Image (cartoon, rainbow, N blue to C red; front, side, top):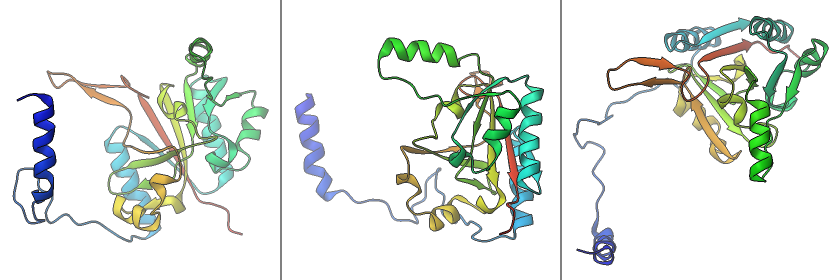
Length: 232
């Protein structure tokens, strides 16, 4: 059977194809899956912390934006970071952070790459030594410890991919019990930016001998700074 015959057979059979019912039994079936639609804030924070720390992530819970900024600066000092690859102020969702970084003498790089191949390669080489990427997050999922990141203008993907350390800033108000709960309240999330990704802990890779290595295809360290927004 050649390629054209193969494709023709697919076209002929597609109109008669029937998807298996929801109750179909197979090894990968998720029949009976349930999820939480609502949880009190304190429970969301605790469950998110437990799940992310189980994935080798680090969670820092702060009671105010000021404490969150101080925590970010402390993490950057720990990494001896004088440059960061960061989202813009709106994407970070922590007013005053970029000013605090500048006051601390930390240079902010936006990670925008030129389209010219040679200029692009040169820019990547300039960004490669940066140890820390700093982003906001669209949401945190308490049942898995995953972060939802939406990329777009001022919110480049490189900040969460290139540096070996990723610091994500997340208001407690953006914690959701589960992915279905998040999508129910944010039905356009996948269309709001250039892409929507979910990050569950540091990058991890397992070889054929089941030896787990962190940081091969992305950051090997993930910090999430959770904070309560000021009222008013």
